[in-house]
Length: 605
Image (cartoon, rainbow, N blue to C red; front, top):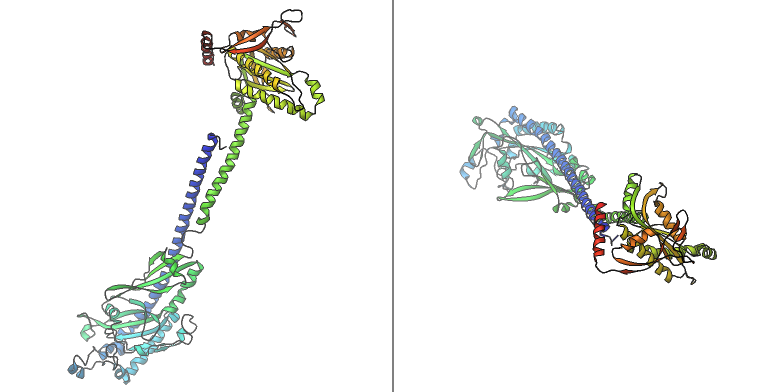
């Protein structure tokens, strides 16, 4: 196969096409899988987003409910006026002495107000009791479960009431906090959010807001990481309900605050299990602005979230006012693992397929070669089409030969020895036949039959020349041939020229065969020939006289009495000839004339 460009080149092209197609298919599947995985990652991230959005929406209800109670119940109505604006004795000692506002807390002057005087009074106790009753009901019916850990009121931005003050129940059984943990909010009481440098930005953003302001999760004074939601309570400024932020006065009483425990929210969201089941990693971050610079902080991440650094999909969550972003990736990346071994399989598979195709093509080529030895290409094409094969030839030269004394020789040899002898000898004949451009018709027993001028047409003299040269070379081969035991072999040969018909007989083991009187005449020439001699018919002798390139020495045949010719069955006495030798001619008018005739003959074909 590698020595035949007609097979090798198509096979190499096939290999390239298979490799390219295979790689494109793998690439297509890889892209499709990667895109599908990215969509899955986005879908899981969106589900996470949806959960937290739902949580916030649920958190809005306690905020609005508490806000309505403050606005409608007189017990809370003037609480902001009772807390009053902050008065710092260091900056304004005269006015602060006469102020009715809650003073700053000793030791925590910058961040807290002292509310003990306000809420230790009978009126303060009534307000606190009322708040605890309302807040407990709101918490219980919020639908947030253990995630809602605290409800607060902050008139004038000062946390004045909290429920519950100490919360242990909501942390029982929480795997993400220490056993026995309680959220102690005592330290948050009196927290002045508008003046605490760590909380002032969030508080100032809440006062002018039209709705809920969210932040976090943040580490609070009372401990724990908590998500904060605040709602400003707007009331009539003509009644003194105002707050000043950045020198702007707002009709604001203060705000309601709810605290959502971040560890509980993560547990309720099932975020860790969800991503683990999908064999995915995630990292949830928030962006804070501190001193004019953005600071990104991780608020939740899976065990191997660092895998997402190389390849991930990100989604901005509709949660919080400080830019939550979730990055999601698969444990083994978005591209499937099979890509690593798929490409080698493509190369190996394509090579195997190419080898199989090579075997098929080589087998087909060998079959074609065998067919071409059995019959001409024209006959093969017609046979494949199911057509009847009949071809007429005006002038051919037919060769017959057999081994002299074959019957006696074969009786003295084993069948295998006979077979080997015939194969050795006639294989040499086949080589000479190909050399002289003649067609081997068949071998029958020890008989060798060939034809010139069929199936490849040529002029009569040219066909006779080819066959006579072949016959002379065949005699040389036999003269030099010996069997394995040293026995010499002799043949006799006969040639006849004339018209014939060629065709294929039968459909089982079809054979290209010659028909006509010329065939019979050539057989008679061989039968009446003599040992190691070539007998030719009169028509062949006439053709050889016009041979285009050789001058043949032919001798008239005479019997023992000197009479010309020989008796031929069915033909009577025929004047035949012995071909003795051939001499190659130089360029001459004869060869030019013969070449012209040959060209005319070919054109006629």
